[in-house]
Length: 245
Image (tube, rainbow, N blue to C red; front, side, top):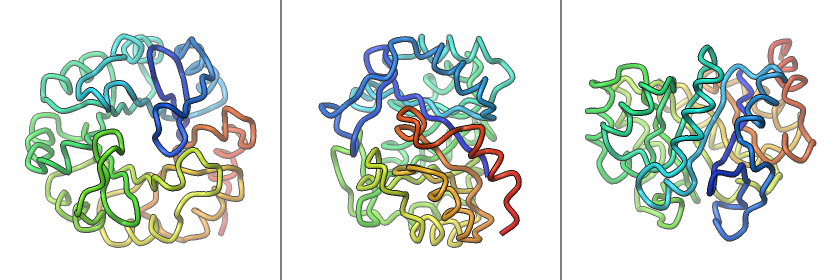
């Protein structure tokens, strides 16, 4: 399982939100590229970037920062989400050196767009499913739909989606552990690899994911915990690599 540091971008700075609220943000660095360097030096094997402004505005806003990080680390797999709602945007990011684009809101509102994107950019598309009580949320978590996460995940199995990033909104940024039972259920209900996100606080939360014994859980995104020091990237990755279960 990969430990994937998150860099959430708001107005060019690296921030963390609580439960997706833009008004409840903490700025951790005004230099996201140097923050990326910190996690790369710490041994991470993938980075998770989110354009928070883009998620709310429906188009990329912090694209220059994303491009700068991709150029600095051309060998590092980078996944980016937030405001990706056109093939042109995907093409821009792929040309900039980003490995994966995460489609969230549009995957819920127009599932056929995912099919189209997977055909145009095979192996490059991740679907981001953010949920509250099992139902998918959209538009920077401002809206909760009537669509169930597992039902939507299965809808994308034939498209060739590289992974699903599953986030439980109630857990995100709260440092209370992620929703392991639902993450496990999702991983067992679909053939698409699942990346867990939201609420990871310490090594115990990483162990809980590993102890779930769900081979489909291939990664864990962590944000606030690594910024506030309750989780060490290198230590957590080594723990995953050496886990015997």
